[in-house]
Image (cartoon, rainbow, N blue to C red):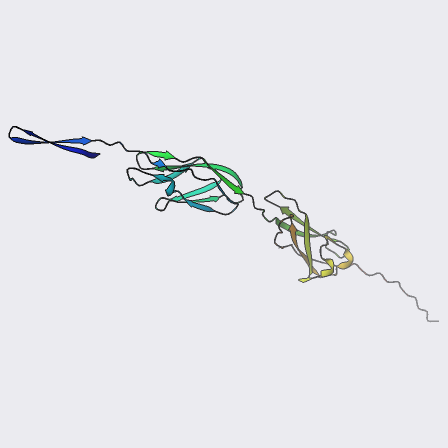
Length: 231
């Protein structure tokens, strides 16, 4: 409410003061100009200042909020007007948001802003790296096999892998990238393990260590008996 005018009127020797109160309606915030569409990379955040896109003719302070967005976290600092946008982990795609300015009595809306999060290739992941012996007693007459589980959030396939074999903690370079180790390479009491890395065509996983396996026994050695004569 504002005092719009004050009128003075003189009537026969006395002064009468009349005041007219003029009620001014609050005007809603003004949207100054369209917000641009925003594009940024997956698993990163971006920010901009929204305060220059709204104004208020009554000089009321403005508070900002938004509506209509999913998979993207939005925080707004009402003191500075800085808007921060952070997509959910591994989310990429197109989303939309409308921002709202509020002067505590009325609101106004921005244009519909397109938010585009660009896909960034994620490295594949290796889990459950396991070494097994085809001999259920882990003896030297069984072959050793390497197996693991591959996953990729981008649904990429495994194009290649690298395997390092270790005997008692020391790499055997001659066996590199083998998925099967022949029984003739094993000896009783050896501690075997491997480390594997996979590649999806764009990125590689970290090396992941397998379980370990100890060779329990060696096959008996057959020798040809000899006969000697006392004659």
